[in-house]
Amino acid sequence: MHTYEQILETAYMLFARNGYEKTSLSMIAKEVGISKPAIYYHFPSKEALFTALLDAVCEEIRFEKYFNPAEFTADNFTEKLISCGLKMIQDQRENTEYSLLMKEFMIQSTRDHQILITVQGVIESYLKGFENLLRYGVSLGVLSEEGIRTKAEMLTLAIDQMDNYMTLGIQLDYEGLWRHLVSQINR
Image (tube, rainbow, N blue to C red; front, side):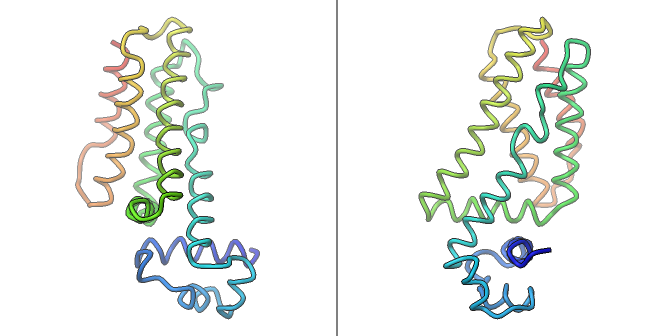
């Protein structure tokens, strides 16, 4: 693994565990096994590192990674929507640091306008992604056109809030909730 990736991976872990304010470049350098000035070769500041990490995470969680419209057909639309959501829920459940890091991005978005724009962009991409996917379902004849935007908003809110609740350790039947929500979309 290259030093750049090691720095990002370590920053991911430390920002998730300690938060932005309590994580220093010195801590990251020590964990990676490099000097603090070596971090500056890759990132001019802690803020730049945090922003690069945000961009990397946004790339990892892009809508199409979980909900690839090319995989949806009239015969599998509902089951595919369920299974894709379940995969995302499972990934969130297995990576507790991800959820903590996302909360840190949300906190920092209240202080940094550029981070806010990036976070809003991720949410918008899910809203648009679900809306386009549901419109595709309409074109396949498996969904009604009625309330497509609202249904897309419900799916986006559900995925986001499930992640929030999992981070807090709230035990719910997330899989059952997702299945139920998707079944309601088809009505």
